[in-house]
Image 1 (cartoon, helix red, strand yellow):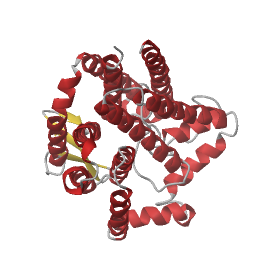
Image 2 (cartoon, one colour; image 1 turned 90 degrees about the vertical axis):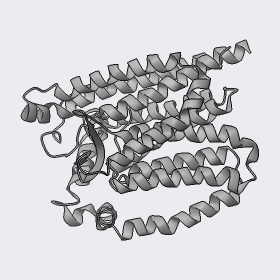
Image 3 (cartoon, helix red, strand yellow; image 1 turned 180 degrees about the vertical axis):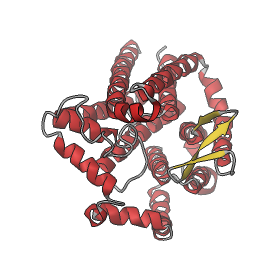
Image 4 (cartoon, helix red, strand yellow; image 1 turned 180 degrees about the horizontal axis):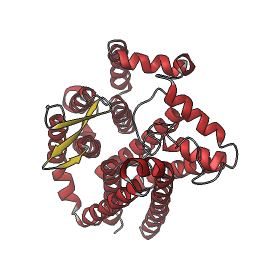
Length: 369
């Protein structure tokens, strides 16, 4: 027992060191990537990095609160948290409440405060799936009483996200949920059948929405419309290619001078690659590989089923979002509008990512005795 506790704490320390390294990387490169844009729009270069630091501090407050919560309270709160965040996310679809940015209604404005409730939804969905898996783990053979309810809540969640629309997060959540169902050892026929039935839906979502089809076509040949739809990905590839092996130096990016859109959010990896080259990019990717590896090691040391599945869900989801972001920046995936966890600018995403970390710390605390 003592050996298991020591190993769990050791893994957690490395895990937290990786998160800290990602946060510091984010602060440095948000400032580097956004300074010109911030100076032009707001009058001072540190505008975005100051907001990101504030978001990190607020996230740390949530971590400290989360650590103190009893595990049974977290479990009992999971269904309410899920349905509450689902309701808030649905409110973004109501004109006057939801704020439309870049063509998507993902932001909710209440009492002068704006936030992205879908970020809460992704945390709460994983907690609720883990809650249901703990209760139904011994009913894996039952389609109606065990598997179907889990698929139903995923469909409802993705349905609301697709109405915003947020196709990227829907894919990431669906992928994470199916990973959890696979680890929970549901019958392969259930999983394969669901995936096969989902394929026509995915194809129709692309074919019947012209902008999604355009993204696919742009992904296949961005140079066909180099000054229009393909401009962003071409500029991203130029940034990555310009970095070479060692990079051109931190703060020396040329693409941040209004060439590459969303340079401090969705495409911050392109600026990092330009300024630090292959070496810096490889180090950043390895940090996320370490995040996934040590997160999985922590999860499988727990004795509590809820802790195992929710921790796996958190690390798989964050890692999947990072992979999507890397691939979009490198032109390997169509654009998805997903930031790089802990690194890209965005307070809602950062606070919720830190909330996941806080929950994992809580689980370690409750499984270390």
